[in-house]
Image 1 (cartoon, rainbow, N blue to C red):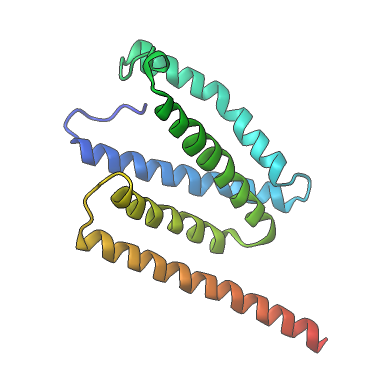
Image 2: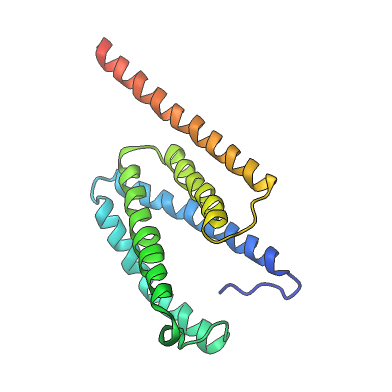
Length: 176
């Protein structure tokens, strides 16, 4: 956990961490795209390296969180319900950890990061807002609803740009 000043409130800390996560993903995926562009590694190789490289830092962070910072219990796994384990394994592990990364990397192999990244990471918050409301019972406000509409509009605009590129490339091949 990154230390934050004590005067920052809970929501401010949450937003700060979300911004840091976005920056890490945004900068980090440029390296992934560069590696995929080299044609020396494919999406599965990149996914494997990503997973393996995270193991040691996660272990260190877990030990710090449970032993030094005492921000969570070290024995959570003993009392976690089967439903919680299912959420962790399917939701966090298989869908977010593997599926999202694998499909994103496969997309990167075939397209521009400047197009795919905003689409993939625009669908994620729109999905989170809607599922947070429908499944978790979080409040749906007009502001959140409008944000989802704007996000989806942006995705449609970006996806249309990708289609326009494909049509122009196909037309160039047909004319040649």
